Image 1 (tube, rainbow, N blue to C red):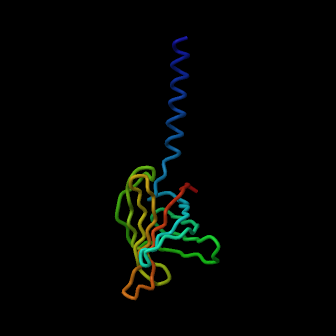
Image 2: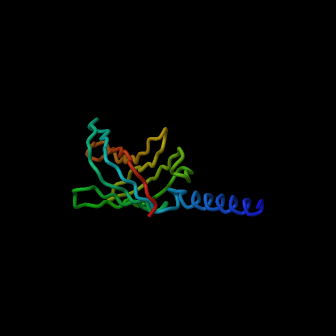
Image 3: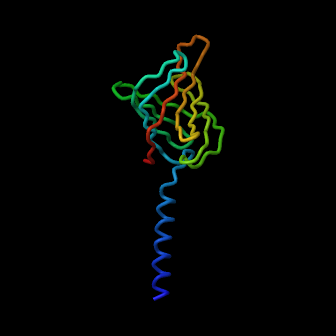
Amino acid sequence: MCNYTIAIVGILLLANYASSAQQLLNPRRDTVRWEYGIVENRVKSETVPHAGHFISYGDNSFLWVQNGVDRKYLFKTRSLKGDWNDAKKNGQLVYRVTCNGEEGTLKLVRTRQRLIVELDFLQPSKTTPHLVLLITSIQKI
């Protein structure tokens, strides 16, 4: 009876460990869909409800899709700072990226249960964006 109980407990612990390992979401390695519903425009000091998503392809690139708009933006990574390997924990990655010939910064940040994607392409002309997207859900794809 005792060996049977130990075997069942062992199987349950192993299943729990396997489930936890599968749920680890590593922004540096995984392809991740980052859903957002609110956009903060730092240039205009305004917050607007607007939905869409980002797809991050590990350390390589990002695709930005805005709901209701027939445009997609591809960001190619030039360099990366940070060592955040679990999206459920606090951390950040700072990417130097290019998009349509413009260079800027794309940050993935989690602090105090707030998860954001920040785009900073601010140039002296102030016609380029500095946006913060408030992430509502993330999913490994």
